[in-house]
Length: 209
Image (tube, rainbow, N blue to C red):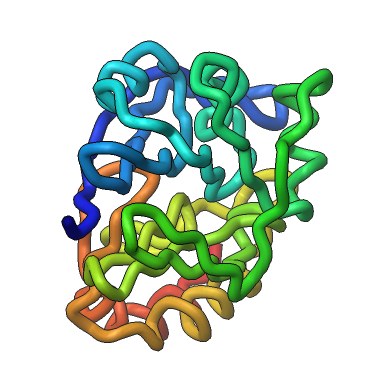
């Protein structure tokens, strides 16, 4: 059985640099009827558990460590025994939310995670956060970009730990080189495609952030 993608939206807050905002987050579950991984355990461990529907959770993969993407990760890990995986460059952000709980393993550029016979390649795509990653699943025709690339442009880079030229380089070199029909599944909001976003690259660069 080919892996499928389940989608859950959870709601909570995002806090950084002294501000707090209400946010809705996309939680992506990739797997089959017996096992799965969760991409970004946001806000509500119980809702994610319900969506797993008894499947074995193999890993909790963090696209980056902003609190709205990792706040439910330790609770979900405790309930399932799954390992939490994070790029080590985001440990300083992680420790702001979970000072007493460390991730269980590292993510690295080029690493391949396999679930339900489907490979997801880790792409280090810093800029929104130093350890931001995207996950490319060619067999599913999709890339999970976290907050690196959205419908209409790059993720925000106006706060601590972020950098606009870096995110543009990440998008240009790691994401826009994927097949244009690749579906972009984001950390917030609607999906898009690589081909739909590629024409806007020069506009993003000239606009800056």
